[in-house]
Length: 490
Image 1 (cartoon, rainbow, N blue to C red):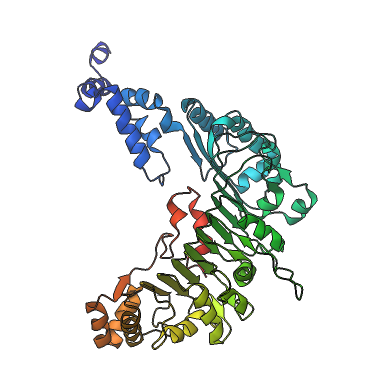
Image 2 (image 1 turned 90 degrees about the vertical axis):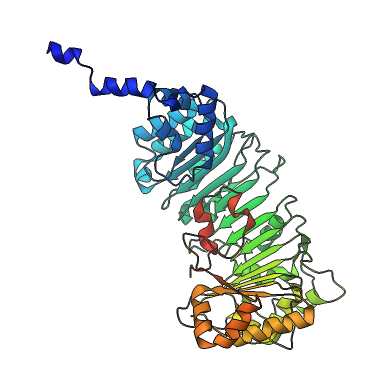
């Protein structure tokens, strides 16, 4: 026993060895900077954060990491039940170690939390509300039919002076519960820095932000994925567009009713002064907005599931006496859009979007009356409807064929476009269709390739899509915010 007591243990040897490592001789400030850089460049896709990893390597690293409040200012609880005691302890630890740094908080309220009842959720809210002045981002996703109104009640009287992003999303909502409650005004104390807001339809019904403070939303995404018929009046859509600082707007699902138009009465029109990026899968909005809005700075328009007919584009909107609707429009993306079988409908679409330089068309091969068929006929020689077009992207997820467009048609199109408008246009197609073109018409394919008119693109994976959306990497919304607009989700 005495021999064993005198003999250093393996752990003692390890400690002696660690003290001699050069990496542990780094100045505190330099190690601090390395940990901070590792934290800032981490993807965030791992179950264990970089801050936890470095704090469990050795005593020295642990003391340095705990002394770095920036490492603990982001709390992400995506999967485990938030009502468990270890989860509450973890949250409190992050809140303490983050000191006075701005907080990025993300919670997933699971069905297990729902069965635990409101006290479990109240426990979480109680802890974070104590630090409301430090909130920079607050993201809460709610599973099943959890009543969001209870959450909004807790937020009603708060002031969040540093809140920049608010994201409250539930996959379903209790329609009867929502219809019985009073719509609550959240953050009566003000959210002067709030710039990004994402809500689903149930939360949008249950909550409104105060109008007495200067809220300057830049990015707004509303989602309606439930089948319940809760439709907002058309005037609410026009009110959204009238927001003075709104730059990015996403409408996923059918939110708004058709406008009520009486014979002989001109429709109400609004100018979306700063709107730059707009994507929409609301069929009523896509069909009726053209006669109601003007967006002088709009650069990107993405429409999904839209149906175009003659009522969509009345003659008045293309009249030379009226200013153009979207004079700055550069990119038009059409995802699974349909049109009545009349060329004039698509002709008017091209007229109101004639300044674009990029066109992205993604079509479900099983769709009927798809807009691709009519569009290809219209842009084929001798027509030239988009004189500034430089990028023509067709995405079709059929394995074996490509509706309406083959190599010879594409070659004739780009050559005519170059001769007529003096603009080089590149056709971009998926890799499988590039292979099919090469096998079916090798001569045309070679001319396209040699002339720089054809670009091969790969099918999207892991949520990456070919339909552009500039705010995608800047809003810090959860990845699920992209699901309603991906081209391959039919």
